Image (cartoon, rainbow, N blue to C red):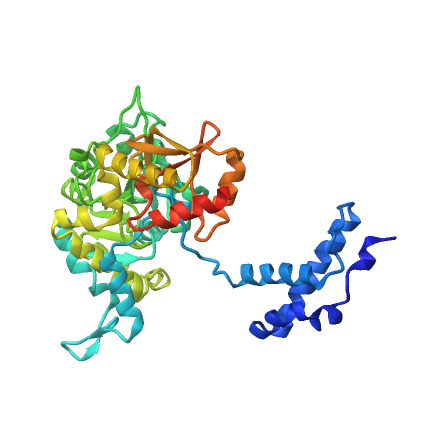
Length: 458
């Protein structure tokens, strides 16, 4: 006999006692739709030769499968995860977690009305761009500032305002690709400007720029290679050199990308130019991200000359790229922390993780390993390296201590089970073993991490 004949009819299952709890908490139409999906999957499996479950005719089987399907559907699409990869600015996991002050500011802005575009002193319409600009000017020395929705948008807006229909000169060694296969040439094209490449991949000289400048040139673009390094027989023209050559004649725009505000070399990280460095070097406009090294929400920040930023603010494209009140609230609260660098290093999670020393991370790893061992989980400590991520500090390795799980399961299966937990745990696999890097595990998440590992191994 065809085993598919044993699958009960929908009406019979819905009228059974097994389905009463489901129908009591979920709309009938949703239960019916889930049940039909379950039956269809069973029929497909049986038609392809799968073994028939022993309880194929029992309502309890269908109630359990429908219940699981309904629970999966009720889960939010965007969910909190525990990042145990050791990649601080993990783009796939949302990059920078926000400081407590930024979260509180977002909640306060969301719960009621706000003066987003209202001037309380004048009692008249105001501008949303007034809220973060004073802090950005104070922290960077820029004449003016503008916030849009991400750094690619900031660069498009800058080039569209300054060079639409004209040429933008860029070194070939700076035609980088950022996340999601977006490339500088494509961004320049979308801005309405025409790209003019100069120099070679590894060497570009001042004379290359001189030869390319014409009456059609609208701007000179310098792109900071924040996600890779070129070493060996190399040469590049710096922003101060470009400013000395073209300043006053052409706007010099620098795309800094990751947007570092503090010098972190004293914590063992390589030198990276800060925004203030770029502006002091003569850049007329600097663009950067808010959710990378700055440690704030996703945003694109434009800094620079007052007249150029004002022109961008008047550009109709600016409205299409504007940010909402929650982003502005979180960014403003994050910037407030930078007024005292020691507070920023302590309170902004990105900075705290990047600057945590090997001894601090090692202590947390030993504590986690001890608690896992007490729960019956076999694990060992091994030396390793965390990564900055987010296209920042390329090649930088942060010394860390990894907790390696010594499980009989394959690494792939254990990794899958960890991701299937609640909350999901995202780890990494090293030498066919799942390892946990506590550098990116947020304070207070250790208990959930231990419970998730135990559940995955059960």
